[in-house]
Image (cartoon, rainbow, N blue to C red):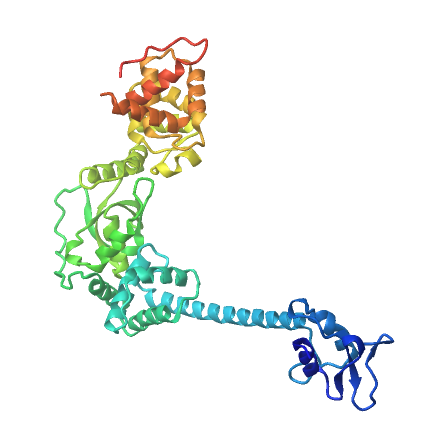
Length: 473
């Protein structure tokens, strides 16, 4: 009896058995009556010579299952293997869904607990918070004898913030942070104490009593101790808050070094715009200060506030040119207002990032715009007009390309704008900038003149155009 027939024999219900007939065929016979099994009026038979590769169980067992002579391994009715697979897959899908729901519940509980634990310091999503928490978690893990590095914890805190499930070791690390914060009444002080230890910052700070305000000596401002909620930041001229710097300041906060911040009274005793001291203000708010000493200036217009910010900061700390540009614009600087008007008229905008240039028509090369404008407002206008041919392409508004176009039109005011547009559209910004670099490498020309020479050489290749005199390399 073959392997296939032995398996069939095992699957037959009690009272039925296989018997060998003539010509090598096998039949199923009822042991009590001796009658052969018939299906649809015909005696059932099968060959015993099938090999394993040609063994079709569905074809063999299907009719027998319908005839009711088979059992499964547990002694119940035989179930088709495909049906068994479907049942297993459905069960597996149900298990996965239950696991997903359980993990979502665990993730939400951890997020809620962490949010509440650090809420006096700020929201989990606040810039710099995740980095601080990673350092604290790493420090507490080392203290517990289960060391983890901040970079390993970084991905897990982002998953927690976005409601994702994390593995038990990382759950334990963040639960440890929650327990540590929950065990102290002054969570703000304890948070920054942990952060100082985690980052290796000095523990001791100098604390002295604030000096009482002296009598008015004819100064242009008055020093007042004001509630923290009356201050506001006007981003018309103020730069964005550098949160990593602010959080580091808060971690080593020393109230004796805060001094006074400069503010402008916007509403009579009710609203004060911060002119200088935005970072100190945010650090005070982080550590839970309720009031701040401020030098209050009255009667300033928005333009005067912007000029105050500009003069107070430009020589003291490096400021991105874009924020200087914004401050000059807010202070109604004549040149800056004119440049802004020309740029907007031609469908562009001044922006701080070159990464956005080819996507949204931004120009980050503020100094180049100034140089073109100072060469004559018409020079800036003609450069922006022909620059439209590069819109949407990589390095479309690169500063070096603008400078090169400026060189062309300053040397040759008679140059055809349409022909220059054809050159830009045909060769593209990348090619012209690259060709300019090659010319500069083999010459003493500045980069702007090198790119301008590359544009002029391509300009002269056109048919029926008046050739431009090309300067020597």
